[in-house]
Image (spheres, rainbow, N blue to C red):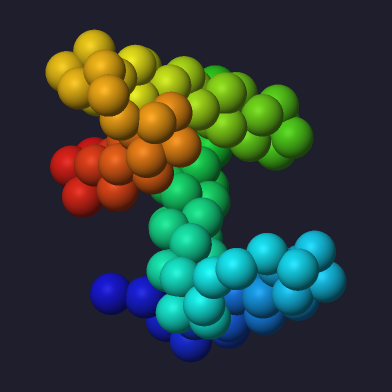
Length: 108
């Protein structure tokens, strides 16, 4: 499904997440850094796909297409996170945000 470039980007993100976590003295493990990096990269790929869709429909404005796509996807994620919060008010916002990202990647 994803080429080597995708996994290279995931590896780089995971490495920087690991370094950031270690430098701040936060608990956690490398596996979670990898999972978070993979989710972020998949969202970034979705943003790029949406930007390409905007390019095809609205013209050659690369930065504007990317910014609009990022905003639209962020709004969708916020809606999903809010919906998840309404469904289970006892969950933390961070858990809802993570679940919204996973749901968006799987369903859209």
